[in-house]
Image 1 (spheres, rainbow, N blue to C red):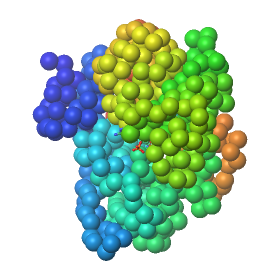
Image 2 (image 1 turned 60 degrees about the horizontal axis):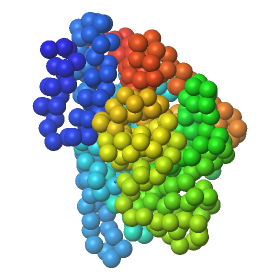
Image 3 (image 1 turned 90 degrees about the vertical axis):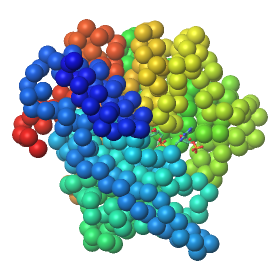
Image 4 (image 1 turned 30 degrees about the vertical axis):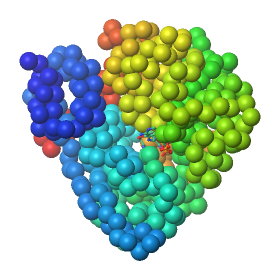
Length: 444
Ligand code: NDP
Ligand code: 2IT
């Protein structure tokens, strides 16, 4: 049995009942296998055994008081996966589905994503099974304060830097940063995605969505095409989806459908983003509202049915495994040309394989959604330098990083006779830098 397969099998046995973690693990290890087999120094140095085992996993109780005065308890997580190339870095997810398997798959992916950005950031992820839906501002604040009252001792600007993810945006980051500062007395970049008036970076809010479109456009340009005039479908209607839709429209694409966990809206005239922003960012309401306010739109319940909508470009930006094999077949039959993952692992294993086999340009999440963490890295850089960059400066850097990621993964794929297999290109390119850093630092 190959070294890679042995580590894969042992890791799955040692971590049972973690399907999302197994999925991410198996995708990465199976793609890097030929490369690892050809370089026996990795096995001697135990690189894979070290890579699959988080440096540290923290699970903790988060007690908080709801508005009726009752005490509630949630579970908090932080998985500090790999700090070979920089401090642990990665988001926090607040969603009832959160468990160790999900946090570990996200943390494992983050190692390679952060490596691809070219910035010095290791990989980590955290969160809680807390459900922010329907909670008052005060409940959110009390929860965030309690969460950080435990986590603060494990994080810091040079150790581990959390940020947002599903259910964690500017509001939650503000409450967590405030509590961190109060407990430590430190006004440092211990979290990113902070408000612009207290250490945040311009473009962080837009970064994941804009970055997704920058890499999509670069990929299309490299194949003599462009987003202009293309029809796009974007799942989700959160932070990533909204700013992906904004940038896609500004480059001349028509976004005809968006969704939330309840269902999707289709608007043949192109989605009116001002209405979406009002519903989602201001009112925190359901996307079905859109169809009540916009005459040309229709709402259908069932979020995954969004992949039935005919499009040239599909951008899954909601959650893991939201696009399965059947949805991929539908998209392919309807002539989809490019699929780029704004979310982490939204395409199931079967779906990703189908896209690659059928010649659909498929940009995996660890490359395509790296813009968010990249601008988090720029936020850390500005904090370190005590400076503040303009929107244009930060946006230009984001674009350069995304273009560079595309060139890197494209080149790696071509060099290894895997033309247009960007999953392969991204995994190899992300892995090489981390493995090199681990080799240089000895058996730690
Ligand atoms: P938000 O919380 O802002 O939005 C999440 C969106 O996805 C909502 O529309 C939500 O619908 C939908 N969604 C969440 N869970 C499910 C589910 N189980 N089934 C169907 N729909 C669901 O999160 P973000 O936009 O920040 O994150 C979206 C994805 O992008 C995630 O996979 C995240 O890991 C990834 N990502 C985020 C980055 C960031 O900077 N924020 C960076 C890189 C990747 P509803 O409101 O109904 O729950
Ligand atoms: O999945 C991700 O890359 C994020 N949620 C953003 C992480 C970050 O540290 O900005």
